[in-house]
Length: 328
Image (cartoon, rainbow, N blue to C red; front, side, top):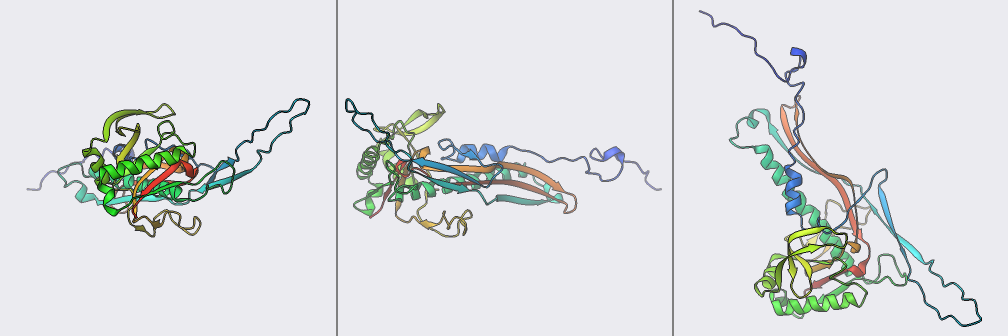
């Protein structure tokens, strides 16, 4: 005896005919953004400008003003402040994280695999994002002169060299180096406490300071009024400090954002870098495409795609707002 036939309902079929997945839409998980917000150390501190309708943004630097003495009976002449120069930042690279999941396999996991993939994408993008910012902050600190050239009042970055390699994890030596670094930055009219300077260290130097009780928990309010809670602070200086594996300590070659157009701007030898300190003014950062996650299905490929992409760039701006501590 033949089994009875029946007509199934396909909820994603348009008007009961054609493609059975025609009405299926992309899934927007939001997991990637949540993860990068939690994992990125640089994002809360650095302002990123939109780059839309163009590929390039510019900053213009103007030389400092000149004072003069007014003599009775003489009309004071104006002093020239028209010395200027500019820097530019071009955003020309789209960075993508993508995972493909076969249709059948997507039904055979006993947990939300797509959400977990989204979290992994977020972690990887956060590491990439922070690494790019720390690279450019270190490069700003290494500049001997301003990124704007020989403009009056514009200076280079600050470098403090440790006396010995072991000083990188010696809290007393590291504290002394940070004190020296901030003192030199203040001599360039940069106030680390009020100019939103942050310090980024790799974990071993960070925990050396933490164990020596030089780092405390605190609440930090930036000069733009942004409140950052639960931040670690350098106790004696009132400056936020973060621990990050993304502070470069290798010879970086072939960075995704490096190309001939920017003279491989993100490559460099950072093997001696111990710490980098920088304020938002130290960098010019822009993004054309903000972090955009999506989960979508291809009927042709019978595959789910978990995506996250973004397009951004960063370059040194005011080098005097950046400093670094390096090994001898």
